[in-house]
Image 1 (tube, rainbow, N blue to C red):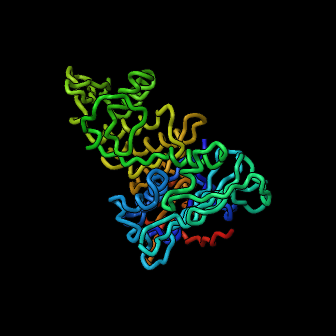
Image 2 (tube, rainbow, N blue to C red):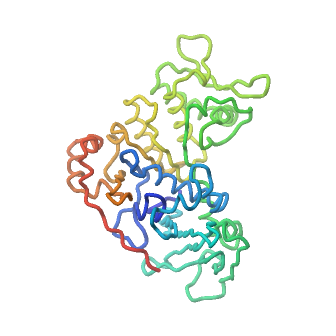
Image 3 (cartoon, one colour):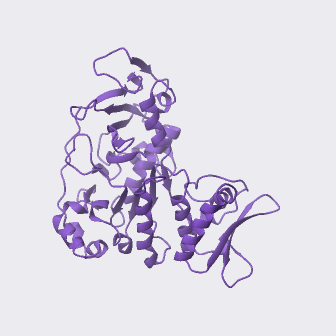
Length: 414
């Protein structure tokens, strides 16, 4: 399964220059773990870092201008870090498989004279051997440049190099080149990015009455929760029974979960509670029950996304469930098959108690108004205290993690 080893974002709201994990020029840094958690106080930039991943996914789906103009973002000018000339820049360092050579994707977005955002630069590069500088196998400036066909491009060899000129500089080059079989490496990264799933699950959305019809995957807000259950009832009843057993262990009393189609073609999600003859519908269930059920559905997806982002899963959950939920996330992320790399934002100490220092990144806002991010494991004292049994959430609740020294991030060079 592909995984992200490092991520850098520049000039994106409060994230003037933030790096988590390893980049090609930061090889001494540890790569991101299968489970990554970003913790911090309100207003420090957790949601902005979460949205940086969402912005990349949206840029592939609808183009950079439409991604900037989505309601929650408000346009390029509001996304650009205050006082910065731009561009907004992203760097993703990832591997297709554990032993595969890493690939770097770089994207720069700027505004033209009319103030409209466009793709100023887009590049994919990879080392040819285990050492040496990465070479570009796709390199575009304002939609014009070159790309190398095939699995292997050879630096300095022109036989597989093609001239690229896109008709729309507001669309990503990988959106076009990634559909061509002559560019399998570009296609793999496009597929990887396209399959990211960001969960903004809200119980109120899950209480809606969607039109009946099986759906394989839970969507962004979870308003198709009943449709996914309908799919499992039809295609994988044993997997639905597994989820039911697991949810019964965490929320006592739930004995059955099923769907019912109404006369007008809508779908009701119903829960049977021990001791009651008639079922309860999703509209009557607690926020916590719906959230736990939704997360277990995502973790039991037979075809899970390679990268799964979950924002503040603790909202509405009983505090003693949070440690269990963190263990569920880790077990899924570290599974050998059918697993996703999971990125979580949280500010709940009970959830943090179940985390490991190498999985945990602390985000803070400096006096200049911009955020910085540090890995808890970079403080040997924190690692030592956790090894001796001191809960990481307790250290954070006591403001101990805020004493970490900031880490300088050198500029990336070609």
